Length: 543
Ligand code: NAP
Figure 1 (cartoon, rainbow, N blue to C red):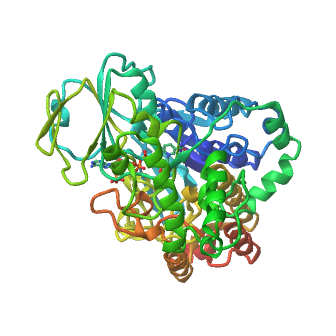
Figure 2 (figure 1 turned 30 degrees about the vertical axis):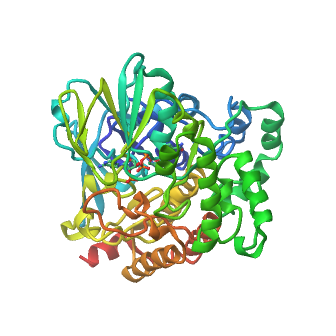
């Protein structure tokens, strides 16, 4: 298949979503080619090899559910898996289902044009290939285009520069080095304790402190593993119907944080802090909708920071104050705050004085000069839309996706966008995606898309495309739901706020994974309500 230039489907990306799509599409008789810019499978877990990289969703849940033998046979050695473990799992899946033979590695898709006469996409790669396909699926992940800040002087630095999202394959050894880390998001919070333990000295440059809670990662026990495997089917079903696509270790309390006593709150927060993981955010039902409720948890976490970090000035700098708890992605850490008690770690506030320039030997900020052997940029990604609009995708009337989304992404269900027939976005903007367990959402989208293609084939339908009204309604709905919460109060990458000039609006759908799935199922059951389906003759007649 990997040299065929006419296929039913082209998929871009060989991470979790591209691989599952390939498996499903092939099983359902669709000839499929996958293009992947990396040299092997893995997506996010192929690129993000920085020290300490680990998943914040428990492995028993951050794994495929589609194959019972696979989920029973695979053993995860830790509760939260490290990047090498997850990559090994993805590689195993590629082997097990013989997926690599239909994947072209080291090939970036650069352009795709929809031919309105033939009702087909022509997809081009940077290696000069041109492939024609009826369906074109972007399975490119939500955080796959690294954000390298535009700071003058980067090219003149004589030491090593790294970005966490594009980390070398060989081990980077910081022993004996002076290292600077720019950024304090999820990637930095995982990398900082590990780099600090190895380097001679580490300086962290912080623009905004992030909220982080302990992960409490532990080795997998037989009992815990069996607890999942003995009732996997039931647990996976519960995950699919849940709010976030995953099950919490400690159950949420379905009352307002303001309707209980301070003592009860204290106990609830302490229990969840001790259990570790994201569960703290769901302690009460209004932590993400009420400022006052949120502040009860936020001030409790600030007290934990003050109790952990020995230097009061550093503790003060590390305590977030400008946005509610959890409205930027909550981070999970292992000994993050404790790391600032080490003699070889300093924190520098760059909120008031940004980095002026990278020099030959380090960087300058606020009139201070720093010397480094290595600088690590943990500065995040042009998330959700960045990877999609960087490909020159042209739909009807040569409209580009970049132009269509100039004021922000517009989709129906986060799956398709009007004027781009037969183009699907897996975990696209407007779907639960990054506000859910990605594996649950990836499986749902891959299955929905495969079922849709099968339906079209059975009914001799050439194209599917959202109706304008359905797309407008869904795009408004995504914003309405977000505006009922505190999320828009943070300058987060969910809002596009981390990229200069990017439109500000909340991109993922936070109405809940279960509710979203029901909506998709209802749309399909009603004959793909809100989509325009055209047979070959009608599509041609509409020209
Ligand atoms: P991020 O959350 O966007 O954090 C980027 C950091 O860099 C922020 O502290 C940001 O400051 C800072 N920054 C950006 N541009 C800067 C500039 N020009 N000057 C100074 N500082 C700058 O990126 P990330 O940590 O890579 O994480 C992205 C997402 O990937 C996460 O939210 C998560 O969804 C996912 N992720 C998951 C895991 C996991 O599962 N364990 C691990 C890593 C990443 P501001 O806050 O001021 O913008």
